[in-house]
Length: 163
Length: 105
View 1 (cartoon, one colour):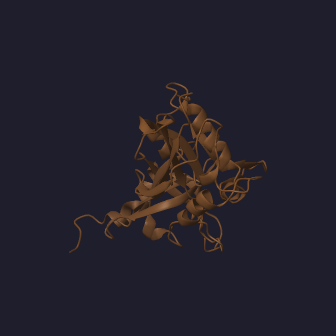
View 2 (tube, rainbow over the protein chains, first blue to last red):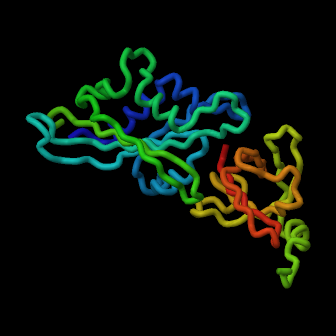
View 3 (spheres, each protein chain N blue to C red):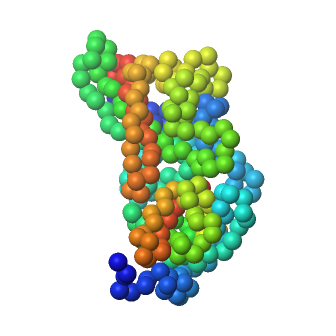
């Protein structure tokens, strides 16, 4: 089985390479540096916050990509692992923005806009050579501890063979 | 019904005594102003003590006395950190206060 951390990192890098999405997640700090807030979460006790806290602490805007589990089974002749990757989305402050980018727009960008240099969107890309293209992704509404809207998308990505 | 204690009339004392100075930037373009706000515990405690540096912050303010009144999308600058007002929870009118739920911008 492929290490899910590699899948998480690969999805994160691919999302960050979608130009429209990266622009929506870009923030300029006080020094003038542009920071694209699309990052991966890994379960590293002591080095990372627990996932719930990391989600709660997500600034607006930002995207946090985390492994949500792996389903084992005999899905067809050559797929026995399906990696489930959660894409936690928090939109930015749109007050006064004449062209607001909302959750609908962000999910559309994720699903439909091709990464930089690619001709197809993330749904039709082999994110890693060992991975098949993903199952049709889903997204769902969620509320954080302050009852603020957020969304979480789910990618289910089959692995080819047993690596 | 007339409240037994007029809490709203005492709000400025609470804010001035227990509050910290916060820069309030309304989105209506009326310009930045300084208000007094009391830092409250967030929904989920973080590993930094409440105040500047946390990702989410709650402020109690003397809502009725602030003009314009804060609303979602306004900015609050607490120390070096800029926050956006994500939720405004106004208290009953008799207290005149509100809790602002902020998130790092």
